[in-house]
Image 1: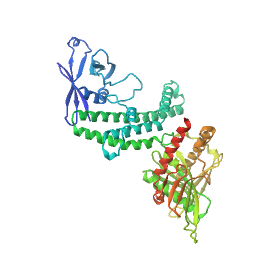
Image 2: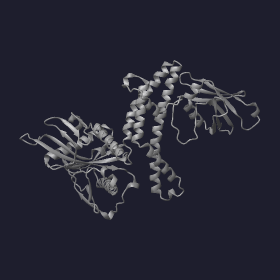
Image 3: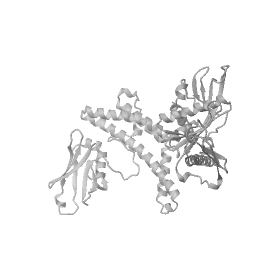
Image 4: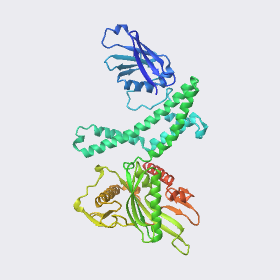
Length: 509
């Protein structure tokens, strides 16, 4: 990592740039003004010996200034010929003045300045230049830069960059109110939202700045015929290009509850044993999908079918953005196949409904549940039995009387653990009901709610007479249903999230 070192002596001081390859090389020197030696504050003028290097390393110098606990007193680019002036106060209280090339500004007095390379090239300028985007293996730096710049624009579009800035300003004004913490719950919610939006903005700006710096480094390497530096920068651009695709996907998940864990509920439809078997296949599909993504899966409740499959089941999926991805699966899933339970080998159609509920774990979003509104039932757990199982009333069913919502848990060993788990599921379901109620009050947003009802299938899985899985919302389809049933759902999920975002943006225009 590059670093700057300021060396002082009686005759003057030098600012050294330390490079991992060459260890150290002097970029600028300074002479102490003899007329100021007697004053407490002295002036040190640093003259850059290589303006190109100075422009390229401006970010390193800024980091060095901050790390050295220097205080920036001001910046002025007038009256110094081709140079600018940066006034600093060192930790001892003395004032130092740094001269730098006119085209190189370390700090700006404006709140929002579009980042650019040393010759003024911006991300928007790269896109406007319409550089040809080639395959990753081509190794052309302009192709990499153009692909990254396009991704940055897509990310900003998905994050609704202008609205994000407006919202951030409103939250900042709210945080500056002296009476904010009179309501700690409201203040905590505002603070968390501000931190989340600020983090997203900083991440995009840092990615944008990194792109421009690598472009500067490639131009510098070509000027100095440094092949090794050029290859390193080219490899860095290739890494950024691959990473930019991941960031595009992350930008799809900008909802308030998207980062939460979730509960996935699967319920068999009409069709008896055939639909119960299909429901168990759907449940296993989501378990496999969650495990592929590194999420932790916990079975919360399961009601087995009389012959095969399940009538309904609930699993908890713990992991970052579990709800953001899984929400794309809400709806009815339809299966067409030759039934293994039909001796006549006829083709059957089965349905299973899927619901996804966020588990925010945030007390500020919880609906207050009174103990008096609950009816708790205890019964013996089902299953294959075994030591302690089926011998005590350890299973728990909790009914929320005002809403009729029910939550059951029987997979834990003790009644207390089952009660705690069932209460968590019940709380999430009540919260989801409140979120839906508030959304329905706003007529403009009712279309974003998916109706989980029979005949409203979102996806069809055909195993006979041909093999195909097709999403009816996006027309995304694959010809390998086995891989889908084994948990390869990302293509369907990302296709739906992208289409939903484009639809929302089209409705706002």
